[in-house]
Image 1 (tube, rainbow, N blue to C red):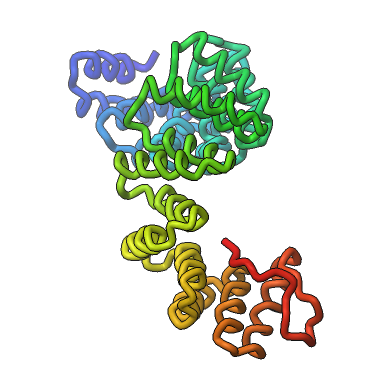
Image 2 (cartoon, rainbow, N blue to C red):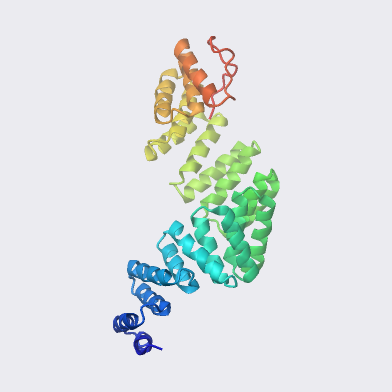
Length: 357
């Protein structure tokens, strides 16, 4: 073995990374086709925080041998660590092809694919991880989450349960089981899972949000409002919770409270066109056509393709007696979404008159 390489290893072991790098460069000068020297140099550069230099060195190794598993693995891991997931996938694929018995390689590829939103292949790779090393609990959790996002709820639940068998009780796993059960329409079972999640983590705003959503679906607006407020007590910047709270208040006929919540949200998120639409529907309920038209016009200026906003703008204009202009918005709402029915394009009336969210 090259004496410079041996000296570099000894120097690095002694904590002298700078001199080790110098010796490795000398080793490379003598044997420029030795990928092991490049890989070792890359690892030392990584340890020194010189990520870009390390990437360059690993790439040099893969140019010498495009299928070298360790060089591809190190390159892919480093690119993933740098947040460059799409760039990490190709070398990690090569590393996996070169060593299909490595759970570490499979897991690295699965995570990069997941982060790069290549979800189908990520699921396949997480399955490979679990086959190779079932002790890697995170792979079970991540696979369960991908199954959930793919609407394979029963499979997701099974994998979350398997994860907890190995890793112990988990508030996130119970929460996600609850969300899967809710998506399947099993609302009472979902609430039971959310209660388990809440017992493990009382400061997770997303659990209260999920509970509120289920109560809202059950028609229990009081409990929904209570849990949305709990979510906001934990996280006042949870904008989606505030939006849903405002909608729930409106649907529960607490219009003034809904107006207040929509206004708070619009102070924090001035371009939130759905909140503008919600506020506009509140003004319609209060028979305030002027303010309804003003705020709804802002909503459709931001999002002209928002069918509910177009429809509600039509309601506001019709309430104000502007029938021709109202009809333009009703027809546009129908063009964007056929569920917004127009009796006849030449007439001034639509089938429904209830504001839409």
